[in-house]
Length: 436
Image (cartoon, rainbow, N blue to C red):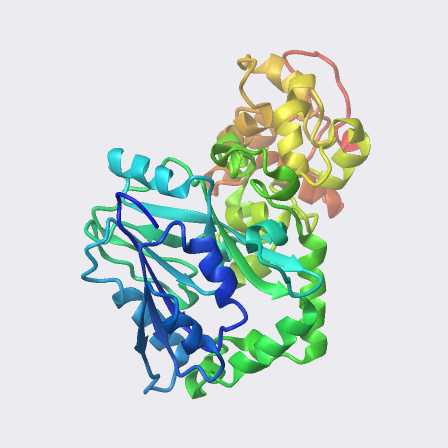
């Protein structure tokens, strides 16, 4: 039975009898009381809930023309008035995980933290798990899912409103909102538990969609054919790997769960505007670009900026790579320190020396942060000062001089490009065209 701080959990339920045993095994040592809102389950869910001993069941209907809108309304309101120290708002197939989570929440209380954002993973298995263990022990591989980076645990006395978006994929909490410096809590989403279960569950949930849901495309994945669902499941499985803190990576400490993502963000090597322009599907999906890149973009071979070529880098520096890790992180951790080049476009060693950087400063990050000033060049073969004098509009428009030059070169428009003069450091006259 849980201890000093009171932790309550709020969730919705509909025909979740298969998941409920795993749900209770996962949360029973943490949660003081469950508040479950049931949408008319016809399987064994209600029996399991009523025999638990710490569950209060409330029936709810969806009187309007949208289940999705009713769901978000409930998630924004069912916890209000709680006298608990912390509340968890989640789905029955979402398991909040961190070793010694209760102790961590007590520490957060002492530090004045009032809201916890998760690091989300879409967990995947070949078949629906069996046995008496917890799912976090039975299914330990998943694909990073930025859509599950959610406001999942918070202090109901400090937070006045959650303001969830549809599906709880984002929130704009109000009140006294204080997040930790970085997330240490995982959200493990267990829906991709074997193809047979996934297809059957999608068919069940399709029956709960209403007219506006269908019209707006909310829950559209439940309308997919079994073949399309199978392909999506295979895609998730292909992108999945060991999850930090679980299974073979159980040795990773919670403060390191999101270490690589923080490394990328801190380095300044992710160019958000360039990423959205280069990959319009990300912009159209209204996804946070950095979260997308960290979650799946790098696995799809997408570039974080104009200057890092992941495929080329992996071929050239294969001995420095960590299997299953974002190659940009290996570049930042080890590659830059040994003057590895992210691509032929950027000369790490020359740049560090030319601009007098500190040993622990990222040359590529420094360049990306200053390139639109017209005062820094990515290599000794490009005379940025001369190019900007000849193209004065570039800086006023906030353009990257070398990227614009490369684009012109690729299009065969070199009429305004003379041989660049030697750099201050090398004093060598080398044709830029021959080196790009």
